[in-house]
Image 1 (cartoon, helix red, strand yellow):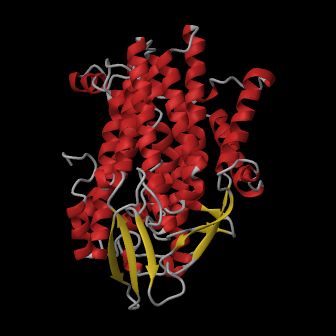
Image 2 (image 1 turned 45 degrees about the vertical axis):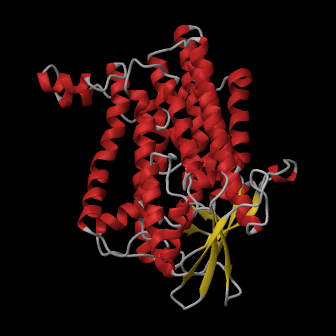
Image 3 (image 1 turned 90 degrees about the vertical axis):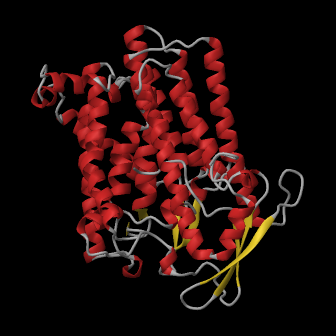
Length: 477
């Protein structure tokens, strides 16, 4: 589903333009999703539209009714011990309380997003907040964004802790206590914004030249029509729904799970602390580098449809937090060696993820005039031609971490993902869904990006892949 943090940029690319003053304008065909739909893509789309919501429901229901066992619900159905209606009737329904909580939450995030300009960049050295330019769109538009996600995260969490320790307006367990009713609210918003985005793309797009129509309803609904749908000058659908309310909520959800563990068992286990710390680092990294996110595949290539709209509202907050949810039902106190090893794996994965991206950004900013691991970086000169006949030149780095593998930042991402799962022990499969999903997601992203780069660079891309033969794991893949 939606692609939270493993954001993807073109591989270690520095670029200059031969003829045009604006060196970012290029062929629309190199952006975004397809113009036409093959049968396999259509089948995949329909499969996801049908089964992704059921997968989310199944995981959450399994925890609520079967102590996080993924097999027991199926066994009950196959043996006739229960019918689907029994499981459904045991599922909490939408409540006015949950609807009010969710509406207040989304409204609060909209207010933080639209009406409080960023001030963090004024006193945090190295942080890029405030008004920033995004990448050029296929139509040649460069959108501006108010980068204030870190500020929104800080304000939200300060208020959360102030309530928990001082005001006591609501219990810190409020999210867990309304978890399934909130799921219905998230689904309503996810489908509503996806449907609205499709209607908007047809009748009042932000920029008609940035729209793509295949003529297939399911594909257009899933993958989106508009490239950067907006309301007014600043409300950008992609930026808001990916980070707010989804990723801001991620750490709040984990804190609510920790509070529930404290309420039920009188303590918060070291495994729950590990999950909160490691995923908290990941979330903070996202918001610290929110300006960098503007150059990732979500903003630069993906259109806004159900894939991002529903995925950011439902898939991300409900399936990326499975480790914390599992630990409420199965508290795990890890041996010291296990806990330390898991922490080290998570921190090492984060270090690789961050330093790999840092090397790439440094290389891009300086056009290769920098030092990576103490020496000048090696690279391959590439060129490509846009539809208007303009010629571009790029540099693809082949040293540092980028000499080890073409997407080594994803390798670090996967190490961190595995650490989240290992924090839960080995008694259930459910917490390990995340590493399975992330492996599939990032492998697919590798293939998507490399197909695009192969079409773009041609023979030069073959030279690059010969110099860096592995995608993710040196010596293996």
